Image 1 (tube, rainbow, N blue to C red):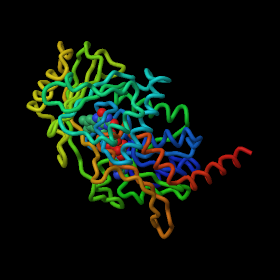
Image 2 (image 1 turned 60 degrees about the vertical axis):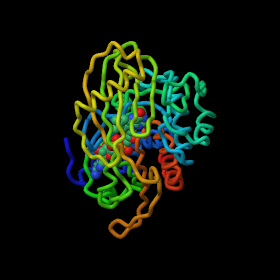
Image 3 (image 1 turned 90 degrees about the horizontal axis):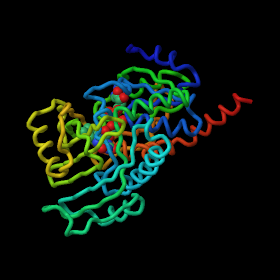
Length: 365
Ligand SMILES: Cc1cc2nc3c(=O)[nH]c(=O)nc-3n(C[C@H](O)[C@H](O)[C@H](O)COP(=O)(O)OP(=O)(O)OC[C@H]3O[C@@H](n4cnc5c(N)ncnc54)[C@H](O)[C@@H]3O)c2cc1C
């Protein structure tokens, strides 16, 4: 049921439970909730979002992801740092709760047709398990550089449903379905100390945020049944992106991709794109045969010039100073970098959180 005014939102959340409001229940908002809950703050958190795990919408990117950990991310220091933290987190989760969390350690090969910056390769080679450079004589024609390593593959829609259940059942996090007209509206409750803005593509248009650096990057993928595919394989070209990702927790389902269409806002799927994806993937991965196409999907990656925005801001709402943390713009790496981004976002409000932790201890005395 949709809740359409802020009064009802604050009443439903309850006093202590809305001290921390996370706006957005994609992988970015859920990872922030997880980092906070692991710190013991679960009962202080309310996640408020128009779309929740289990939903599908053009404005909800997370269910459409491939999904894996790859070398697709940027070469800047932030991307490298968030990836490293994300890889450690996902590896741990795969070994402790892989089946429940729909994450699996998977052999992976990645090829690049273009030059890859040496610094980036050096950085990832330090933490990716089983990392090896593929000798040049073993590279397919047209490929300039290749690596093999152990990656993490995720079943994206199932993984966010797992986080949703775990946050509610294990940590007591509260979830409310509601669409805010402005970011300021998230401070409806007087007991809210901090709002964390994890609104993905909506950050471009949401009043109070309206970040002109944000833009969508469209991707189309094809879901197939191909039981012989056991490894992840990707080829990054100058103007194409081709990948084959086995999907954990399914009966031989595999995601084939894809596209990276900067600035394209269209979630229709096109048969000629499906044909192009299938033909590129067959060349890359012979063990794709035999396969049956199940469906095609398209999603919009929440991209941002200069990379994701993780920033604390003080804003004035109804004449009072309020703390707002932005965490959006994950582009094509929300699953692999999301936990690292969450650690950084949470770190910006450590002072506020310590106060809540003290209040929590006092109430237990
Ligand atoms: C085809 C494709 C393949 C991908 N593959 C990978 C991959 O292999 N690995 C990887 O790491 N990443 C991948 N990604 C990228 C990844 O999916 C995104 O980075 C990630 O899903 C972004 O998550 P998010 O939480 O920022 O946004 P979203 O999932 O869109 O969540 C935004 C949330 O904000 C809420 N919201 C927005 N506005 C409001 C409002 N006004 N009021 C209330 N709630 C609001 C929405 O309802 C939603 O809950 C892929 C993406 C696509 C499209």
